[in-house]
Image 1 (tube, rainbow, N blue to C red):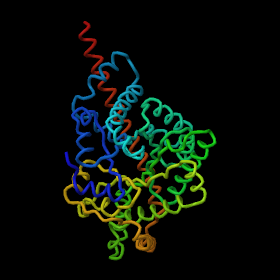
Image 2: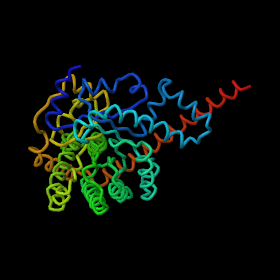
Image 3: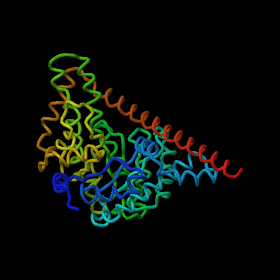
Image 4: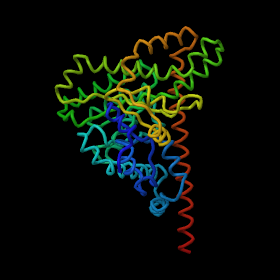
Length: 378
């Protein structure tokens, strides 16, 4: 199967294409292999919402759930068994990509229980458990970039765990995330861990920024405010890349790099367009820069394959423009600090809701399976 020209062009421009979705059905049918071959997919990300959606469709999980019901496991244990099974399978499918890219890609991410987002020690313990349970070198453990998550990132990286830092919205928090990563590498180095085996991405959320700021611009209601709609998210992400270049050009980083450390790549997440008036691939086309990852839902992946455009770099030439947009938003009355706080709080809450939905779905299926088993025994 030949690779799609548009998506292959992204790869050539330095953007790793990751799929923001996983399901047992996708793995069973060989769809993930097809996307690797034909759509340049080089990684997979998951989250509680994705697993909840996967479990609600079809019967792919029924056999495993029946086995778990016979064992009378708790719903929490069942959730871990189900999700880690999919992650292991996907990691094995992506193992050739992992080998071919020297460990840079071929990665599969699984998130810590979102209910622990504000508990540092519990997050560390969860990250360590998931790393052990999946037991694949091309796994990444997703830890949220909450204040409590920052020391957990440092601890996990310091233990040699590869980390996908999720739910980043603000530039200030992003700087703290990069600092936490470097601190973890310094701890790992002191412990004698091979730094080249540790990889990390920093998931900077994109479309949700426009969704929140556009709402506020509409409320302000002036022509000047409305003219800024759809500009904040890309500007915010471009400035994040500037922060990335600054952080990984310091003497501190050079010392770590000399010891074998690999930069923490910026990852553009939430790249499906929420406003139908906007170009459906804008968060891909406008964020092309070397050494980045763009994780897309399958719809966005197909949209870009169909009509996406690739330029060599749509980020670094626009730092001044991005700064100007953020200044204009401030002058229009948009409180950036409040925006990013609202988005982080909502992000955590949404993942908790999805995780609870997943647990409810699993509990229902466990109970149904147990009832069927009891009926058969009678």
